[in-house]
Length: 100
Image (tube, rainbow, N blue to C red; front, side, top):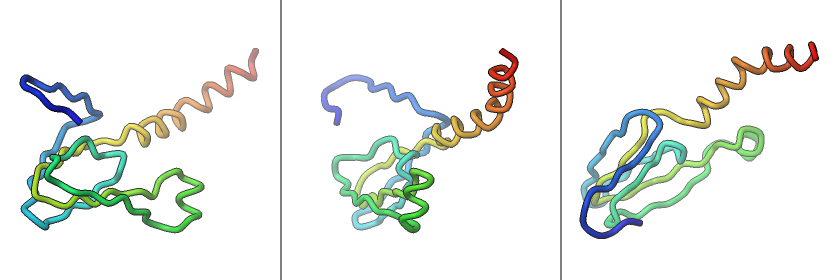
């Protein structure tokens, strides 16, 4: 939570998309993409998929934001990017470890 006067700088992975919600309007967001929302909004954390997907992937949570207010969402998922990097570099790392 932030308050006060002045500028607020937010660092995200990717661009920031702003969504304005009218009173009672809702938006469901992957929890890894949610950046912030107005204090006039309410929210509910929900699980999607089965227990197996949640346990094996560590994912499966979404946030339902209910307006009125603004919601800021980042366009990229840092966890997915890190996973992709690991799949790219893992064979090289394993090869280096074997050659030692």
